[in-house]
Every structure is written in C-alpha cells, then in structure tokens.
Image 1 (tube, one colour):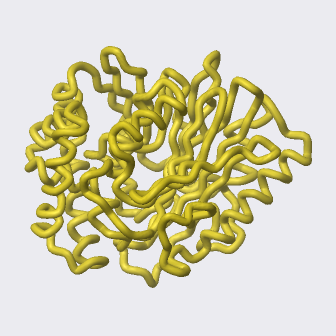
Image 2 (cartoon, rainbow, N blue to C red):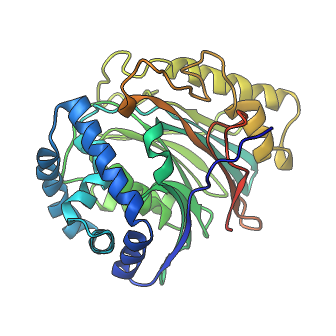
Length: 365
C-alpha cells in the first residue's frame, strides 16, 4: 500500500517584481525560515562558515544583482519583506551555490530527448539533503511581457527547475570547480533568466549580455526545437549537443569544459550514473520507443527509479552515516513535455518508484 506524503504548496504569483516577491515571501514564510536555518547549519558544518560570514559574502552578490538584474533584485526585496527577513538572508539563499565554494555536494541526473523535430522531453531527478524536502514549492509566475513560468523551487529561491509558456525548460546539475566570480550571475539567477526567455538561443544571448555565470554549473536547457547541455563557468562555456538519438544526458562532472579544473572524484558515482542513464535511454531507443511513446510514466519507471550502484544511483538513496545536512537523496523527479501544442509537466516528490513519493502532480495545475 502506497504511503501518502504531504504535497508541496502550489502558489501563483503575479504582478510587479516587488508584488511577486511579497506573495512568495508571505505564502512561504514558514518554509523560508526553515530553509535559512538549514543552510545556516549546512554552511557551519561543511565550510566552518558562520551565518554572518555568509551574509558578508552575499553582500558582494547583492551589489551586482541590484545593477544587473534589477527586477529580480526587487523580487528578492519583496520576498524578504513578505517573509520578515533581512534582504541579505534572501540573497544568500539565491547565491548559496556560489557562497559555498563547492562545499556542498549535489547529485542530480538530467535527460533531454527529441520526440520529433518540434518537440522535446526534458527530465531530471533532483538530489539534495532530505531536510529541504518540506520546503519545496510548485510555483507559477505571471509577469507582463514575459512568458509564464512553472517551476519547482526551494522556498526563497527565485529560479530553478521548470518550463515556461514559450516552451523553454531548464534542469540543473551542480559542478564543483573554481573559481567563483561575484560580479557574474549566480546559477539560480541564471536559471530564472533562462525561464524568462523565449527560446534556447534567446536564453544564451541574455546570459551572455549579463556577463555569464558566477560559478561552474550545468544547465540542461531545451525548447521545442532544440536542447543543449550548458557546461557553464566564469572562465568559459561549452555547449553539448544532442547525440545521434536526439538525447543529451548529464550528471555532476564536466564532460567537455576544460576552461576550469574539477577536484578529482568530488562527486562519487557521477560517472556511473551518467553511463547508466545513457544505457537505459539508449535501450529504450533500441526497443523502438519514440515520439509520443516517451512518456513521463515510462521515464520514471525505466530510467529515474533505477537503483543500480545504490546508494549513489540515478534514484539516489540516503547514506545514514553522513551528517544530516549532506545526506543527499532524490527529492523529486520532473518530466516536462516541451511541445507548444501540449505544454505540461509531471512531478513526483520523493523517490520515483519507491512507494514513498507523492501522487503525480501536474503543471499547470
């Protein structure tokens, strides 16, 4: 018998940037306060960094964000006001990947797949500390003159994993490599820039115009006509194209970007997960799966619930011996259908196929 677990809140935000932020902060106030407590403990454990030092580093990003992305800066001001927290706390949440300087160890597996010339499927398992699961939210954002956004995010964070009404979708894989440059875009801000874009090409142009990203990360981005694996870094980017099957896959290590150097074996299991997701997706191709046969249920069952090499499997399992702030596991799976005639996504919170996940959540809802 499947256990019922609590579904994340679904919130709709609209209006000016400040109004969107206020709604976010007020509706997710409890979750934002919990997130800040979690990250305070995580920074202390992983980097021996007290929260005041985190806030001091956040100030470097705050000054840049105010100038480069004033709308998102106003949104963060609104979140802070709505949640009754200081602005630097909210900036720190949105720059946590950069401030950590690679002390955190995300583990995610992402996949895009060409259904036909004008449609893509974009999917991933998102792995992170179990402590943040209760602070996830499904969010719809409506802004004048911009595509409508549907995403799954952590409370207090303005950009993450999802898609928009123009058919642009984003997935995220953390990468650990120096340097970090605070005058450039934090990765969660870059994700939001992508989700406000009208195509993959538009997103690339917008990020370039803003000076590129602050830290080394991978965004798997797709629209209906194309997909690219963006191995991003402050020193230069590399774009991974679809393979002969129309597929792009990625985990948590760089495949082709040689502008930066990764610490050896910083993400144990990443290479095995990459081999496995490629093996499983190619098996589906060889079995004749294509077009409308590439369904969310099939991907959850045949790929994203896979437990080979557990605990560091595609469906990541917790390691009890690790400190709770870094005890990573799969927290949700998302599968997006990027077809302008049928834009939608399915989300399960928890480990797909485990019996410990939510029922399928639909976007739009």
